[in-house]
Length: 99
Picture 1 (tube, rainbow, N blue to C red):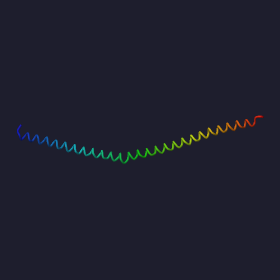
Picture 2 (cartoon, rainbow, N blue to C red):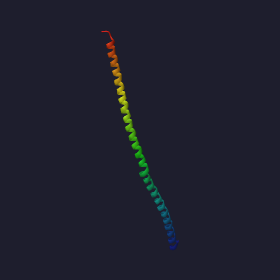
Picture 3 (cartoon, rainbow, N blue to C red):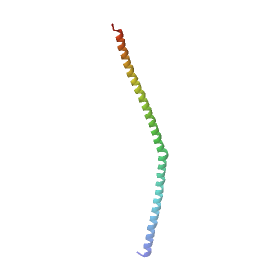
């Protein structure tokens, strides 16, 4: 193989490598664009949605806590009423018994 042929072969390989590098740069640019787009989506949409869901969850937890407290108060009132009814019944029985 002559020096000229070697040089031509080397130039062809370099040209081929340049074409491949250009293609790779294009693909990398495309990937960078997609990654940036995904980051923006995460920042603007997904994180916002998660924040909204978390706030709603907190509101539901507060309401549940309040409802449970009211329910507990109802149970306590019911127990007190039952105790008072029993006490009134005992007192009535004492009054109604002949002395």
